[in-house]
Length: 622
Image (cartoon, rainbow, N blue to C red; front, side):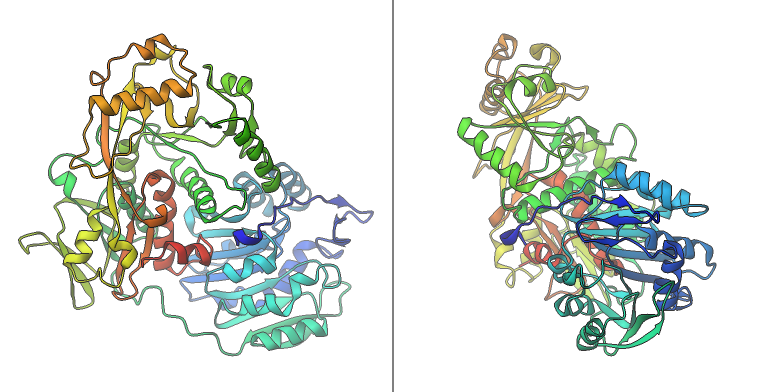
C-alpha cells in the first residue's frame, strides 16, 4: 500500500434544507429522507435476515462499506443488545474513506441518534480514533462487540482486509456520485471474504451493481425498497471460497514460551478471549524476570514519507498499546507524556516538513516543532528542533509485564524450554533433560532469540531461513539522578539516543548496541556512551550531567532479538500447525507487544484481523 500512499481527508458535511446530512464533495446525502434508523432496519438488518440469521451462532461478522456517522452500526448493535438469542460475539468491519473528526462526529450523533441509541452513540464517540490511515479496533460490551474501522478508499483498502464475513452492508454514496464504491473490482474483493451462506443487502438497485455482484459470486434479486426508493438489492453468496477454521475445536488452551513483552502481550490477548494460558519462562525459574530492574522505556511511533510497512506497523502498535494498556493499574499503565524526536540538522528538518505535508496526519498525532517550542515542551533546553508526538508513552516494562500476566486464566511456570514435540492433537514443551514442562493444543514461541534454538532442536527451523538469521544484540540503559537535570524532562526526548522523564527511580538515558557480546551487562563504557547521548540531546548544557561518573550509576542491561529488516516474526508456522511465533521484536518490544498479541488472538478466534494482509505477510514466519 505504501507505494501509492494517499493522504486521508476527513469528512466535511453540511445540513440540507430537509435536515439531512449532506456531503458537498460527493453531492449526496448520508441517509434516506425517510430516516436513517428506518433505512438501517429495513435495508441492512432485514435485508440480511437479521437478527434471525445470527441466532445459535457463537460469532457473527458484518462488513460495511461507508461507515458515515455509524448509524447502521448503532442499529445493528442495538438489535444485538435486544436479542436474547444473540451470538456471544458480534464483529463489524467497516470501511470509511473520509472519517469524521471526533468532535464533529459527537455533535452529529447528538443530533441524529436518539432514544436508546443515544447511549451507544456516546460510547462510539468516546472511542472514536484520530483520522489516521489503517485499521482501528474499537471494543464495546466488554469485548463482545468489536468495530474494526478501515480508514481509506474502499477500492484501495478492501483487497488487504482479512475476515470471514457473514453479512454485507453496502452503503456508499450513490453509484453515479462515487463509482469506486460500487465497482466490480470492489465487489470481487469483498466476496473474497465471504463465509458460507453470506448475504448482502443495499439500498441501490442499479443494474450495473447487480451484474457486479453476480460476477463476484452472489445470487442477487430486487426487493421492495425503503422510503422513496421502490427497490433495493439482496443477495447470497453462491459458493464461498474454502477457508480452514481458525481453531479446529477442542480445548482452548495455549502454552506460551517466554514471559517478556512478547509473551505477556500474547498471553493477555488470548486470556481476554477466554483461553487458558500456561506461560513457561526461564528467567522466572532463576528468580530473574527478563525486565527486572528496567525502570522505564519509551513507546514512540515512527513516520515515513511513503508511510511504509515499518511506519504503519509502528502506528498500529502504538494505538493498540494505548487502547489495551490504559486501563491497567497506575503503576503499569502507560504515562502519555509525548515524545520530541530531534532532527540531526537543518536539512533533515526541511525534509521532515515535506514529509508531514505529504502525510497530512492530524497535529494531535504529530507536528513539527522548532528548538524553542521543543525546549518549552521538554521543560529543558534541547539541542535542536524536531517533531512532537503527543501520544508518546513512558512505560515501566517490569510492572507492565506483571500486570498483563496477572489476568484471570494465565498461569506462569518457571522452566527453560529446550524443544517442543507434537503429541496427538497438541504439543509438549520439554526441558534439556527431556522432562515435560507443560503441554497444550497450541504453543506460542515468544522467548526472543531463544525461539531460534527451540525451533532448531525441534526440527522446525529449516523451512524458516529468515528465522535462522536471528541474532541477539546486547544493550544497556543508565539511570540518571533527576537533580543532575534540574528535575529531568517533562516528555521523552529522542534522537541520537534518548532521555526519559523521571519515572520515580530516575531519568533513563539510553541506549547502547553491542554486537557480538557474550553477556548483557551494565558497564562503565556503556554508561559513558549513554550519558554522552543524553548530553548531546540537551546541547551539553548541564554541568551536573557532565560530572556524573560512568560506572558508578545504576542501570539495566538486556538483549534484543533481531531479524533481517528489523520486523518481527509473528504467525503460525506453515509446516507445523498449532505452533505460533511471536519473536524478533528487536528494539520495539513495547510497540509490538499488544498488537502482535492481538494478531495471534484474532487469528485463533476467527475475528477480523487487526492488520492488513500485506503487513501480515511481511511479519509472517519464514
